[in-house]
Image (cartoon, rainbow, N blue to C red; front, side, top):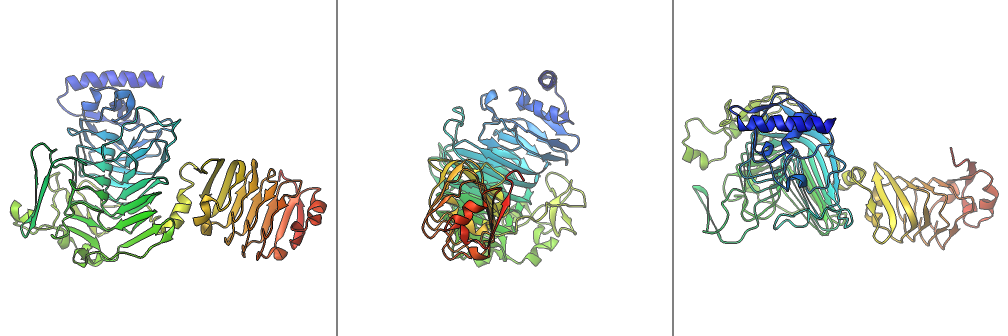
Length: 560
């Protein structure tokens, strides 16, 4: 029945587009989804007439059923809000957002996007954003209040063969609160909330506005910077210079977690040499990155950001943290001349162009255009103490500030958002939820397992049935307080629980006491700890030279 309704809507939309003299009104989730139904509907002119909530969402444009066509029409959010609860669980795509792909002719404006979304993909690359996964067109006058967690782990047997990467962005994860990758124009937008991007094998980029900005292209680019502002010229044969983020700001927390490289920026994670960021402000609470190499920057990494001109600013107390494989690194120092006191940014006069300035004078100075229309879309909000869109209500409600936790603490929580991590060359999966490590699958946990850099976040451990052994140093020198060991574990290797000073409770579900290697509980105060075993097995555990060392041994039915 649902397919019939959408088909009918698609036919109606197609006919309406041919005879269209005014935008097609969108009022329901079904009408919004029908934009995706044909080449014609992807070129339409639309206006949103009320707030909409979307679940199991398939991004508009860039899906394979439409041969990868993007949205090339016009979408006016009309000041309304779209809330995304989640993306389709059957979705096999690398362009994730309200719109998957916005073509050069496409425009999206006057829209607020909200939601607390987690997406885990199986493709080699991921482009994920609140408004668009990939933008070649124009995004203007939009607000992102989204908390977005995007991760990808390439699975050869599951990844779609139809997936096509963008040149220069063939591997890794790229995420931004507005767009995953911007190769068009994003102007007069702002973001709050958070973006967390993870690819534990290769690279990840996270930005408050875009994960990456700019087209990796051939040819030559001329850049001139002087007292009159910045100038850009592109040699014949190259693409036009559209890779621009201007008159935007972000208060969002940006976090990236990459295996080889993790990069986070207040405005963009990565800014290509063709990308331009100007007249933007980073008000981000935290900017954090983890990887074998990592970079956390107030505005963006690499590329042209106009640091030598009064075009880009960041709050002087901005928090940037870099981690190398989970270990915090020394902070980098950034240019002081682009710092601005948070108290200064809370004054309307700092943001506003002075009255009477010519267009040329405005190009030479920092400022936002205040007014009540799309050309001058900013108004001052006294309560928020920052500029907002002219179409927003006076009551500005941002997402709860859930992002002030240190990066590795947040990562511990975030791993439960996506698929459990799978250990290489094994059938074992694990994830950390709050302060609990959960291990499942079949086979032996290897020695010094993959969670070794995260074990300091863990207070309790559950090893589920199916796991047959615990490797050496698996939990050594950790802060775990309790552990439950599944019924199939038969052996525990050397130093597995060495120097676990906080351990007070161990439950073993095996009716036969697992064999314990040398020094398993060395320097761990098991004499003060409680051991819980299956009903009828206490005598067997009391005969074991290692298990009998526990201060208290109690029996319990495994079904309890």
